[in-house]
Length: 298
View 1 (cartoon, rainbow, N blue to C red):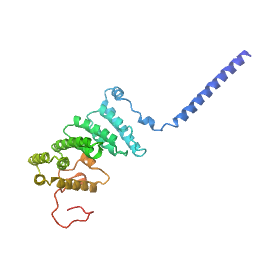
View 2: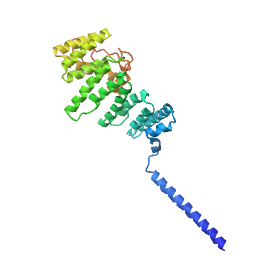
View 3: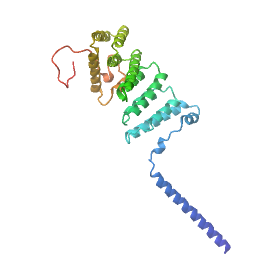
View 4: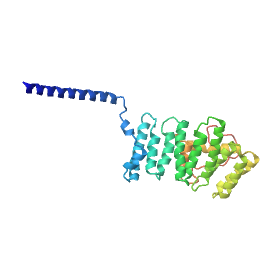
């Protein structure tokens, strides 16, 4: 009799434990229902942990993290379009392999054109990637021009003083970028345009003279000579505004769903061709009948 009661007690205890286990599992499933199914794939170890976990194979782990970053980006593009952890993914790739130049370039553009609303926060996050790239790759003109575009076209300054500071920094960046190897001639136009908008006509004239002396292309020298003449006459601002509008229109025709900053980041195929293979004819048309508003000036 005692043995039977002992067995019955053990069986009852076993069933009680089993019931508690099922109850706990049910509660766990209920809590899991409130967590996104793909949340586990968004988990990111710290940069320090990743360096240790790589066991010395940092470049290989950086490649794996790069694939994970692209998967996250695609998931967000097809879903909520929030890209909340995009910057964190990209910075971990860079931490593992600081020489991975594509990560800087891609992340700077993806922060703005990844589907989320472009506000000052996203612009500043994009700027961080471009500034880091400028330090790591100081001879690549694309990062200076991209940062300059963010400062004057994407970032919404809260005060006129802040806008002026951003414009001054952008002018310096455009000038530096235009002097670098492989930089397209139209960067000089953007630099001159920002100078004239800031009332720096004398500085713009000096820059045009400098650019004219270093120009290798005869067509570019002719254009710069005309700009210098217009600046000396005080007519440079209107002329340069027209040139920038013309260039913007060329970009919109080549890739209407893109942006001017993104085109600059990709760069032209040759010095005479703009992004998308559009030949940049930046000369003012001859006087004649006024064209229709929807027509491009010849």
